[in-house]
Amino acid sequence: MADDVPPDQARERDLARRSHNPALSPWLVLGLILLAGVGVYVVSAVI
Image (cartoon, rainbow, N blue to C red; front, top):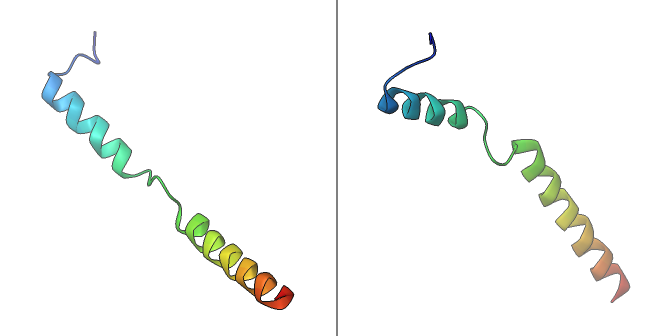
């Protein structure tokens, strides 16, 4: 097959592909911070 590559190169290619897809998007982190801020605001308004 044309896709046959040595195992070490296949592993490096797989790791490189994963590194381009971060587990947590910066937008997701920002949204969670904003949501936590809204939660603190609501709790402080109720007390």
